[in-house]
Length: 153
Image (tube, rainbow, N blue to C red):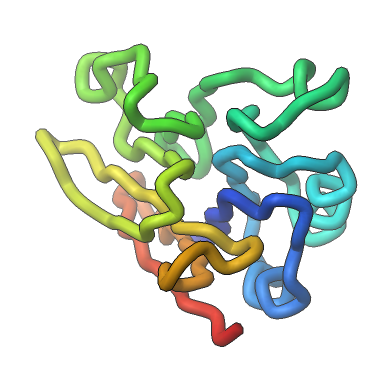
């Protein structure tokens, strides 16, 4: 079984508790609003990272990140983007099994039309009363399930 870490909206902050929870992941997916490249470097010390640019990611380092991309991990196609409203593909038609987004800071796991939509929420600074959270994918034999994890502040 392969564990993939999901994180978004870190906004300059990689909490030690988030980094600790991601230990042991085979890969980490960041759905944008990273805000500084050092966050990706820190995550890269845990596992290989795939990331997309969020609306708050600015500068040359951020321009090098795609706005959307599809990765294949352990036989499962995952499409990453920051703002779900900007989804530019038909995931089911493209053979995508998971769509990972961020932006809203609201954690969500929802199956729609045979596609799993996941928003791990925000792992960065607390916003309003929303939880500080991350997510994970568990992949085995081409099957995928998702979970969310709330951190205490």
